[in-house]
Length: 512
Image 1: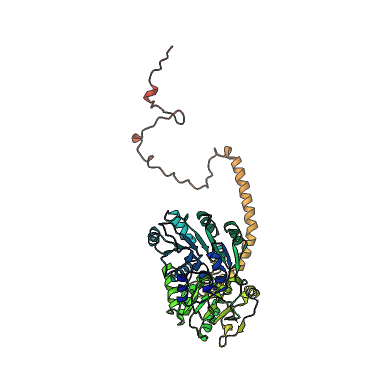
Image 2: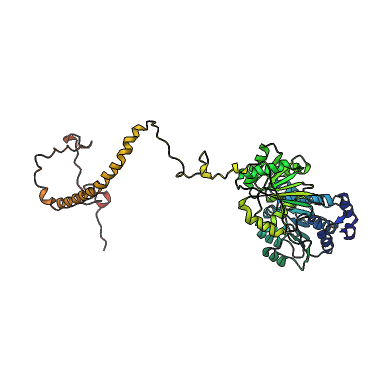
């Protein structure tokens, strides 16, 4: 490995690096730092945990050593896909720039915007931000990007996964075309390649390691269980955490909702665990990470938001509660352990429904992890339970739910009804043709009566007919004859009757 003293860094920067305990540069640092110090664009391809943050932070500090920050106009811009990664970059910058007069600001969501605006108004040299909050402040007129001299895109493929590529393109267009760009990504999908071709000027391509290479310091295990029931998976996870000497570990889940459930399960069974994912409040996420770094929290249950770029030192264990949907994410997950030459262990719980995802992971890492069998767990007693069999009826449609039982407990009283049901059905089937014939005959008789109505109407009613009920009198008909006031009949609908308006009584005057 190359020593930092041979990379062309200033004495002040070298002293800050030495204070952190590092003496030799990683491959990505040794290749990228001299090119960045020369002012050229860099296209770096390296996996997480290879030291990319120092690869762009150290040359940035040296290049910005001369100059002065202006209000709302940063001189350098670092974009990160997640709040946690942006906060980590800010911590590294503060650590390496402590001997300089450079100022910096962290722009992320979930925290007060007023404090961030106050820093921008004072003027900062380096702006470390997530794309969403940066564009929000730009649209409010709180920041200008026309003074950016250096621009860094970190974890570009993660930006693609999170849908930030349109925002990145817009930010690129807001910065000066003569800026220096340092572009880092673990993979190079077509969309990322298009970005580099469009916005980078003759970049130096640096590839530190082949894609998806796992560290030799990580011992990997596969734990197969015969059931896909979540209860069985949680039981297996608790057995793994209990049998291992876990100093501190990270449990990875595919879904945010599963993160909360698994963390609650571990806490219920006496383990010191807490969840972290994108739906939690930012202050809670930062506190959880701080507790985990300091050792106050033993187990961190996370979604893939914590899989990339987070530099959490000395993580002893990684547990994959779910097999990752994307094979690359498996490498990023287990990369949280076995860092800086230290040993680590990674476990992956595999169910019968995970065969396809597991094949992709094994094909990518080009190795077979060790098989581990959990003893003392009766997985046969933990069976898959469809939602329709839930005792409380949750998750079932209305047609699947049992009908209520009749309140009467006298079963014998219901037997005559049951015996009479077939006879009633037979009688109904025999009665149906008879009813149809009677309806046809009734319609025929009615039509004959309607045809003969003019002649029959003048005949007297038969003697056997029932007397007709007197018509119910209306209230106005109940008045006495002398109280009734006959109303004049109008000549036509809408006419005036005897009440002629005055304007119609005016004489008509014809003029010659």
